[in-house]
Image 1 (cartoon, rainbow, N blue to C red):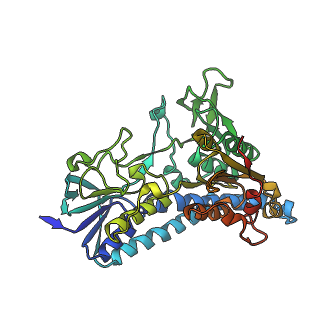
Image 2 (image 1 turned 90 degrees about the horizontal axis):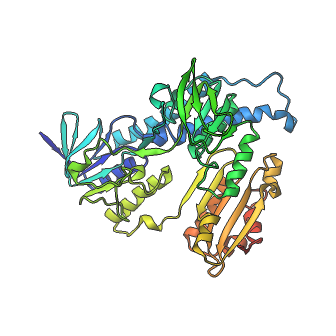
Length: 459
């Protein structure tokens, strides 16, 4: 017997629960499906647990440097990985239960545990239940990619999801992938006490960033004892005793690295392979991402795709913005588009990198006249007070309109300070909206007007 709803949401990641509750509040009888853990990646294996672990790693790092601040701690600093994991698990459980209870108690919302698959453009099967609705929203997220490296099937390996179960300290963690996820885990486990080596196929880490940013992050992490092997184009995995061996080079010595554990951190892929999208007429691109228009509608009428699954953003904040766009267009009759949002993200190393808009390389590629301002974090009072002076800030401005094109802040509290730039860019205001505003002293953000005062033509 077919169960009829007005709307079905497949997946409970960042966009799904809020959308389901809004749909239900509009009078739609709504079903929301989850095949595994309510809350999706962010709550269970992404943002919340990883940043909780990063906080524990920072506590260990600060404790080791207590003498630099006149704080004497007798004896060596020890990290109890069981307690680290228990703290993380408790915080995750709180978030997971919060979302679960919200959905279970929301009027007009039915939470169904199980794997949903399309049987037609209007029907979804969950185990032995067949659900039907005129509006269906796909929010199934993504999963860590497992690269086709020779020997990957012959050795035990970890992914960002598998790392959530680790309650021990790897003797030597080899991280394959020198980008955002890989570097966060690399610094985290180095601070916990592991020996860490990062292996990257490209000639530099976080290759999406400008070269100066990549170099600064590498220097910062090398200063904490993390080793790097770049241009590793001949990767091959094999067992070495109780650990793992990695062939990293066909030319440079040493050509092999041995470690106790290996983490694969080479990106993510969408959870679209087992949804029966062909039966619904939903088109995907060559990488498996669902193709959507500027309002997140798929190729099939009455079906939308939100979050990581659509390839239009790979962050919790873009997923939530997807919900806002769909709700605005469908429920509030307020035109909102994906193309209107500004690219914003952060790399949560310590200190973090925060980015908005265009990089210097991207601005140069446009050929437009531009201004650039740069300041080392050593000039920031907050950074000196905390003895965390690594990094620099850069802002790029259109020379004609005076509007900010982009900014990159690498340094203490950069992930918070960046928001004054984000808001001015979103408001379409010139950079003087910041440079002529009084900021609180002593903060990191107070130096952004000074940074803007150093603008010079981009050569």
